[in-house]
Length: 284
Ligand code: SAM
Image 1 (cartoon, helix red, strand yellow):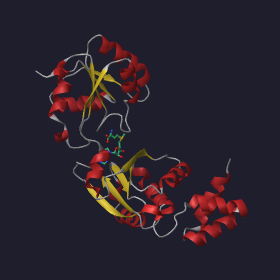
Image 2 (spheres, protein in one colour):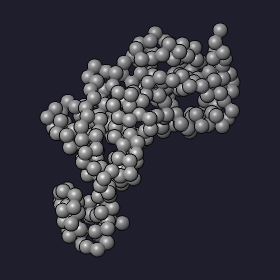
Image 3 (cartoon, rainbow, N blue to C red):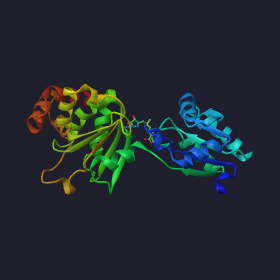
Image 4 (spheres, rainbow, N blue to C red):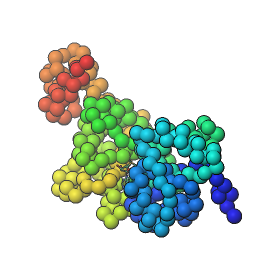
């Protein structure tokens, strides 16, 4: 008999990111054995459990109540009950709730046991054709364009694959920012609807991908992971300087319109966009 049947354990259980067959046998067993399933969205997980033929007591644990729930879960664990924590899809805690609960439970001395399975970040990397020996997972980029570009500037020279979660309605904006911040030849992969009916992998430079999206709007639909190839070791033959850095240096010496014109000449980017960016950078 498995030692995992002991009570008082918090299991962190990965669930499918699309294809139901990707749930592990161990995950099914744990979900049917525990006293309580703590779920990001009880309705969503209720549907998964009923598709698996599992009846379980559910408790909601999401980003707005994690702190409060942690104490309740610790009480349940210490009274000998076992709990499985799941999110809507993939591995809990990976751009999903769970971190606060896991930290609190471990600090309280509870046993926390992983039940591994799908996660979109690893699934995408495994088929992207980009270097997988070293990579950096960034989760979601900031929504605000100015903050997003600043983050990309920080990442632009890293010599390993970059991986982002992206929402369908921000894909274009992000690709436009990649085109502005990274060197134009940098390869990007969009891994869309992984393990689902319309699973698609698109590769190209950000400029090429933007054209593909214009030609086929379906490619912006659904869930997606965006991966960017590593920066060339040592910065490649050309010295790579971020557009924001160039603009900032130009703004130290010139008024915004002249700074934008100069950077436009150096980078082939549009003067109007650079002027807008210069004005944003001047804001306190
Ligand atoms: N915890 C999940 C995991 O382990 O992958 C991630 C949850 S996060 C809230 C949701 C994001 O993951 C989506 O916006 C998308 O970027 C990515 N994602 C989830 N499922 C996906 C799929 N089937 N195909 C592509 N990307 C997916």
